[in-house]
Amino acid sequence: MSYGTIASSLRRAHQDTVDVETTGLERLNWLAFFSIHSSLLKLRGEQPNGNQPLPNRNVVFVVDDDPGMLRSVARLLRQFGYDCVLFPSGEAFANHRDFEEAVCVLLDINLGDGSGIELRHRLKAAGNPVPVIYMTGNDSPAVRTAALQSGCLAYLTKPFSAKSLIEPLERASAA
Image (cartoon, rainbow, N blue to C red; front, side, top):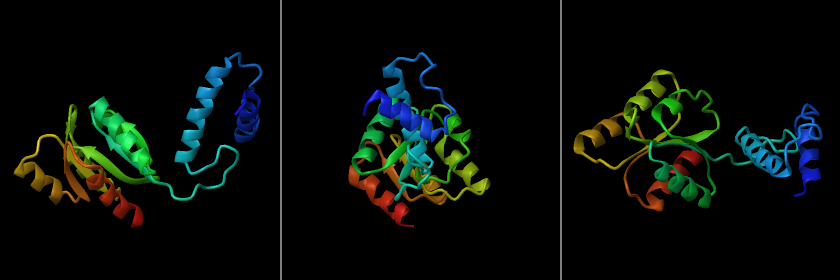
């Protein structure tokens, strides 16, 4: 896609509110902006060139304080056709308000700034019915019981297989 095509797409998408010629940004910056812009529109269910909804929105919110785990899970989800929004902390996730596009939340239990199970309870108390899949590297009977009692689709122990993650996601997508 050429710079001119990107500029034209941006003008159409923003109803000429972005003046591409006078910003002074380099072409590479526009390519990066367009890529981010397209991803955000996709999350909202829009095409970059209009307001037509995308079919099959499959967005998974992933909450984990381990950057390596976030990257690995994001890569795995993309391989199976899911988009994802990554949250590096419980606080970042707790501050998020738009859960409409989420098929599911993949939630680490032991976050550096709190408990994933507690986050789940706060979601439920706020009336948010988004399904949750827990993951943990520190399995114990007490934690497993608390997670299952909070109402989750699955409880995964790290490291987990792609199949153990994708199967409950497919159930959530079908619901």
